Image 1 (cartoon, each protein chain N blue to C red):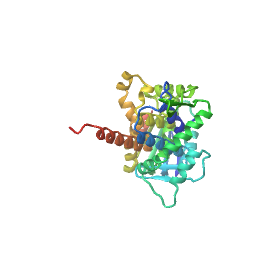
Image 2: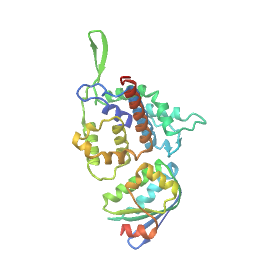
Image 3: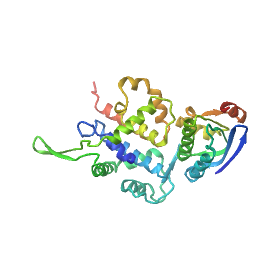
Length: 216
Length: 111
C-alpha cells in the first residue's frame, strides 16, 4: 500500500503528460505536507484536536519522508496548531515529493524520462507505466462519493487531499461533481488535518487569483 | 479511558469514560471489536462521561460505524458533552451518527 505522500504525488501527475497538474507550487507543497501529517496520524505518531497537534510517539516509522517530518515536529517544547504544522512542513515538501517520485519509479509505477525543451533546457517527466494502484483508488473513491457508504479513515484522507487539489475530475464526471457537492463537503470535513490543508490551499488560491487580477 | 458494556435486551450499551485519544484508541477499538460479533449488532454508546475526543478517537468511532453498517446493524450515541459535541459538529461526524439526548432515545433509535 502506498503512503499518502506517494499516493497524492501520483495523483498530482497528469496520466498522459507525466507532468504535474496545474496547481500553484505552494498549494501542492501544502497538500504534500498535509499528506505526510496524515500518514503520521494513521501511524499513531501524532494526534490532533480542534486546537493543537501533538506528537505522541517519536519512534521512527522506517519511512524516511515521515521520519524527517516527525523529527521536525518533535522538537522539544514544540506545541503547534494543526495549521502551523501543515505550513511548517510545507517548506520541506518539495524534497518529499522528489523522494516519493523516486520510490514510485523504484516500484515500477512511474518511468523517469529526461529530455530537453528547445534543445537547451533540461526537462523531466514521469509517465505512468502501471496504473493499477490509481485505478483501484479512483474506483473506491467513486463508489464512496456516489453512495452513503461510511468511509474508512484512509478514504477520508484521500477525499480531503483530492478535494484540496481540485482533482475530483479524476474520479467523477463534471455532472457527478455537481451532484455530489454536499457529499464531498461532508467527507472532507471528517479529518481535522484535512480541514487545515483545505483552508491553507484556499488561502493560496485566493492570493494567487488576486495577485494576478488586473488592477483596473 | 474506561470501556464498559452491558446488555439491554437485544441492544449492547457501551459506556465510554475519560479521554478517547491516541493513548486509548487501541483498547477502545478492541472493545468495540469484542462487541461487534453479532450478525446484526445494535449498539447504544453512552458518552456522558467522555471528557475529550481527539482525531484518533474519531477514527475509532468511524471504523466501528463502518463495521456496524457492513453488518447491517444500527448504532446511536447519547450523552455527548458540549466539547465532544463541538468536535462532532466541526468534523461532520454528527452527519454520520445518530446522536440522541439520552439512553431511552438511543435505545429506541437502534431497535
